[in-house]
Length: 252
Image (tube, rainbow, N blue to C red; front, side):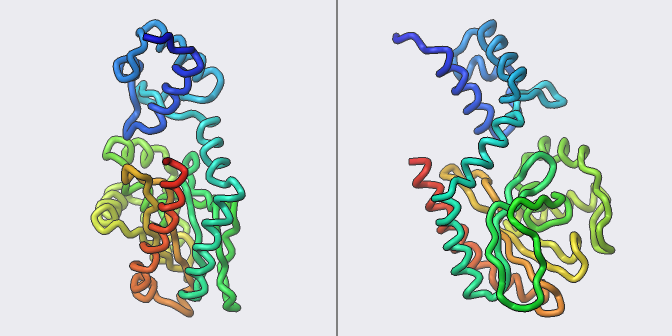
């Protein structure tokens, strides 16, 4: 059997931690990657020291800041950014309201793409802006996709500040809302983040049907109701599939 280099092992550890649906223990990584336990502990410690991995509150290994930053930078590579932007612009031309993409970043959602409506009344959330997870269509959709354990850990760390009269700040009520979103696959913001703004979101998935990002549509309530936005869900889902096709090309 050919000798596996340390660089290959390091990359395999980062890849396994990034793809895992839950935090992995060093033992699980050792068994999955067939790396001796003393070696896996040494490599993990080096990766934690360098910021590529981190240890969660339960002792599991998860991607660190440098991996998260890299994932956002790769997602924003100009060629792929422009291709996604063309899909969004076509969507806005049809629906006449602002559309965009949000991805989880630390304890927030960050907007990576946006196509703005030309109508005079607009809500401006530029590319690079961050928004809270618990009261946005993009963030609630992301939280709904997590395992019960991961969701619980994240909710415990969120401040659950109240932005509007509709913001859900009770954990039990928020969990019930996330369960409903998990069933429908549709994130909803009913004036929960910004008063007089409503939004809906659908997931963008990878080849293994894992959540990658949220595709959203939002509008001021003076012009569009939440029910009227929900009518456009099939068109949003088609656009999400078009974006997924770009991702599949990258994963081939």
